[in-house]
Image (cartoon, one colour):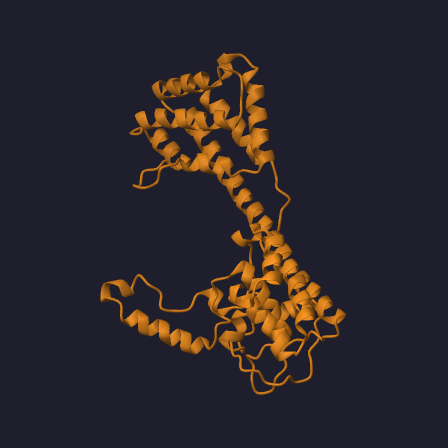
Length: 354
């Protein structure tokens, strides 16, 4: 959705695109969470879920049994949405790893091919020592990279060796223990890694005289680059719209009318349905967010006072402003609109501000 320059900053930021990101809480046991909601008091719930229940029981006067059923249905929908976001984040991570691995392997193959004879022969011997057993799996790929790294380190003053070490992500900095290329190989989609292993197995069935470092890394680069993921979108807007649609159907089924914000004189006002849907999803995707914790102006001022109390040399290292997840809602007006949530007549004011 294009941004309107005439809109206030607070409104414009709400229309920014949401993209995939890891969602650790998507791995939680949903059944255990539902049991907790049914059996324990709200004081033991997450603050976002207890606030979501108050929207139903306090503001809309829904009886507790119906409200709890509605909340649990919303929690289930939010969990499905979070799992879908997590899967897209994983697909994006694997796609990036595949691109990085393919590029690195091709660079290593070229460096091996243009290396001086002494370096090239040493690389070829290291490759043959790894492939001699004829068995190729992920461990063999790791060992292949490690052996090549050892050889390149020995000749690191040569330009091809220095370039190859850089392509491998060799840990030159203190605290970095793993070779970057190995980490990326382990992050590959199992199918992409399997194709690389199969391609290398076919190379092993050839005469050992063909086991050159340049040829082996070239085969791996081609195999990895030929695999293509499903092309999952980096955006999650469609998942958020589907989540909102599910919640809207649940509200309608019990006689509640889900609606978009409509309150004269307050452009930042959010409808009860909007707040409810954002609160429940926030409990899974951004549980540390402060955006529902009260007046953000007061929170900003408190953070600034704390920032000013820091030693002068620390202030430049610490951001005094609010994080994006504290300022922007997961569910935007556009998501509600696309989910066909209609605007309501002006609601009774509720003490809440963005």
